[in-house]
Image (cartoon, rainbow, N blue to C red; front, side, top):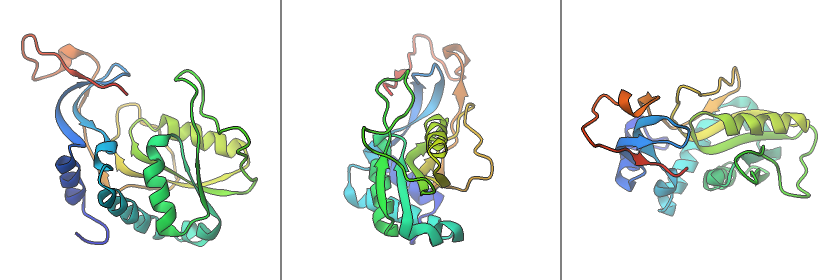
Length: 204
């Protein structure tokens, strides 16, 4: 495998670890899809997680503006699922620090833990395991900018866009592979539906 794996190599790793599966899946947002991706399964092997994080860091280094900011760059995740990647990238880049936001419940916005304060003018790179709708990353971006922080880019191991994916405009985005999935609004729209077939329901 090269320093930056190809799309095919990343997909092969996801399938090998069971992180990427084909089938009939029902997501919590009401959509149905032919693919399910759970990056936590790919991160069970530390060497796989490290390889993916280091490879992603190499893509990030190609951006001259971010590369120049690395000594004072903070790596920020919108949820704990992105922490393995965030810490991996921070270590590989020798960036300044890592921190993250959380939600008390699904109805509340993202927020930082008590006493965690961002510094005005601080430069941050937003990092997560997967970009699907991008709504949490957008919340994180808005929260950072409200605090006077400069968001330099968004890095995710995988891009798996869906019909609701946010447009981040000119903000630099980095990912190792793109997974194209088919999405359906109702169970009956599933083109391969068999009598009595039920989808596998995804918890989160």
